[in-house]
Length: 422
Image (cartoon, rainbow, N blue to C red; front, side, top):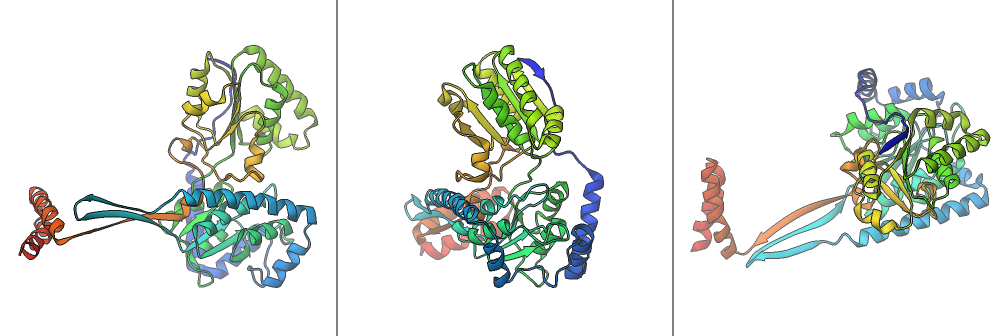
C-alpha cells in the first residue's frame, strides 16, 4: 500500500469539557423541568414561543407553505423508506421450537412504546432525516413518536421539515433543539411520555447528551461526523469519484473521505478533479477544509488489500466503482451501507432510495449496523414444558445449582421433581 494523501480520522475522543458541560446542563433540565427547557431555548436558539409543540392548525399551515413538487418528492422518498422497512419487518418472524419432548422455547418481537426522534437542522435543513427514524419506528409498531426539530434561530421552523415529520407519522411535533430537546423526550417532564428510545443525529453536544442519557432510555447509536470510502478500479471515472467524495465533504469540516485505488495515475487524476470541482463548488468553504484535513488516498497493491484497508477504516458509507462488485460484496465486513456500482451514490441513500441514512461512524461499523425497523423491537424469549419434561430438566438443574452452591436455586428444581414425579 502507498499513501498518496493522508488525513485525520474522526474517532470519538474523550472530551472532558463537553462531558462536564452536558452533565451539568442535563441536571439543570431534569430538576428545572419546562422552565429550564425554556431558558435553554431562549439562550441557545432565541426561541421562546407560547408553546413548543405545534398544534394541528400550525402543522397544516406549515404543510400548505411547501412547494407542491417538494411535497411530491418527499412522498416519493417516504414511500421507498416505508416499503423497505415493511420488507425488513416481514423477515422478523416469531419462533417456537420443541428442542426436547415437552420442552418448548420461543421468541417474539415487541415494539417499544415511545420513541423520541430528533430531526437535525443545524447547517442544513435536513428534513429527509425525519423519515429515517420515524417511519421505521411506526412500521415496527411504536405507539407514540415524539419528534423534535430545532428552530431557525429566532424565526420559527422549516415548513419542509414539518411536512416530512407529519407525513412520516410523528404523533407529536415540537420546535425544540439541542440538549433541551433530548431532555424533554427522555424525562417527559409531564408533557410527553418518557421515551423508551432516542433517535437522531446532531452536534457533539447532542451526541454527548445521548451517551449520558443511555440507561435512562435506549439510543439508536452514537453518530459522529459523516464518512465516505470509495474503492475505485482502473476503469472508474475519476471525475465521478471526485464528485462523490466532495458530496460528503460538504457536510461538515470534520467529515471524512477515503479513496482506495490501484495506481498513482488514478490517484493523481482524482486529485486534479477534486481541485477543479472545488473551484466552482458553492459549498467550497466547508468541503475544502474537510478534504484538506480529513481526506485520504491510498493505492492498494491488490483487491484483498483494498478490502483490508476499508474494513479497518469501517466507513459509514462505502461505494464500489469496480468491475466485479460481487468480489468485494462477498468479502467486505465493516461498513454502514454499501453502494454497489457507479450508478448508486451516497446521496441516494441519504435522501430517496429507501435504505436508512442513520448509520454508524467513527469505526463503530465494526460492531453495529445502522437504524432499521429492528432497532425499535425487543426480541424476548419464553419457555414452557410438560410435567414430565420439567422432572427431566429439574434433575440436571438441581445438580448444576448444587455444584455452584446455589442451594435456593436447587430447591426450586427439586421441589418440582417431587411434585411431578408422583
